[in-house]
Length: 372
Ligand code: GLY
Image (cartoon, rainbow, N blue to C red; front, side, top):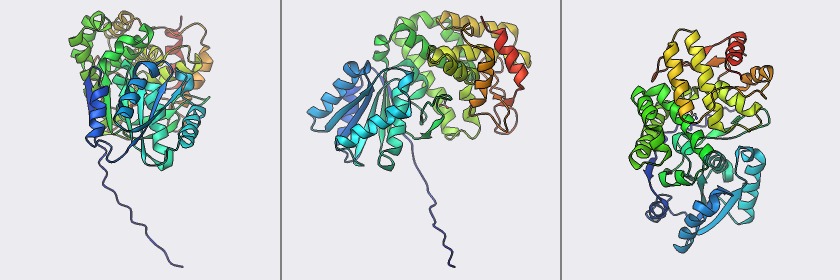
């Protein structure tokens, strides 16, 4: 029989801009008019019910007044909406409203919205472009940049998804002012994670200026937004698909993601990451990579940032230990952790290897150590 080779070598350029600023809706509309999305004239604005009246509707109205066919697809705010059922609801609603392949999704909101909308864009009509308009510190610090898109499943967070890069990211610093305080603090956990893994000066800046950031001091917020972006995209540019280096962005997430799921999302993502960071600094200390003072400095900053540092008493230790195995870094059935080295660095365990196997009993002991 004949044998064929379907040659599909590709050179792909997925580069995109991240724009930081205040009230960027006019900039977004101007970019679209100037051809950011080519000839696309149809826009599905994906958002949640809290962000919709504040930012999504004004963006949709501006696009409509410029003659673009625009519809809003909104779902209930919160991590519990980041599931396949919501994706299906958006897809079916878009199809019923006449959206096909000649459209673009504009995600307006926080991490739940950008993760869900980016994943939907990746599969709708086998792939349509999308833009992220990030309105939360968490989305600015992490979710909107880097192209990780996903939904949660009953087993754990982010298990089903795609690497799918947006066409542009807008980070609206003004929007942080409308965040409920807990959400702002939650975003700060990913910011502190960035400082812990890559930048001691940024860690010191956060330790000295957290109150200024929380009172929306312009210079402090801009510096925070800029540093977050720079740290994140420098990792993503080197390892988009997480074949090695990108695992460092998982600092605090092995315990963090597990505790978030086991709490049944009573803990916000950043709150869970804060607890995960404490767990992983304790582990780092145990392995000899952090001094007791450095561990304390991380905990002090998290406390200053109004973030939890202990595993709540309603979390069952054994359920949490079991949940650790849902982590994507698990290899050959073994737990693997990213380990912080002092403050501002991550331990490299060999060529392109940034996570190390940790036995279950050690993980259990750390969890017990930081439980209430
Ligand atoms: N949130 C971790 C990453 O983007 O890789």
